[in-house]
Length: 127
Image (tube, rainbow, N blue to C red; front, side, top):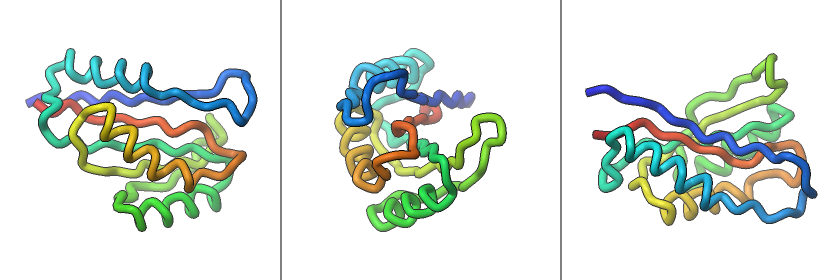
C-alpha cells in the first residue's frame, strides 16, 4: 500500500493582520487532492496541523495549549532557510471540512496576534 503525503501551507500575501482567513476553498482542494490519489474520506487520517512562528517560545506555548485540547505534538524545529520555528500537531480525524475546521478552531485561540503564519495542514493518503 503506497502512501502519499500532501501538505497545505497557506501564506498571507499582503492584506492586514485583522483580515478574516477563509480556509474552506484551500481545505476543499486539499481534500479533493487526497481523494484523487485514492484516499477514503470515511477512514480516520492522521492530520498534521502545521504551525510556523518567528520564535521558539511562541511554538512552545502553542504546543502546550494544543496538548491540553487533545493534539499530539510531533516535533519542534528551526528552519534556517525559512527563518521560522515549526511544529506539527497531530490528530486522528475523518477527512472532511467540518472536522478540519473544528480542530483548526481549537488551535486558533492559541496563536499569538503577531509572529506566526496561518495554520496549514496535511495528511497521508489512507486507502
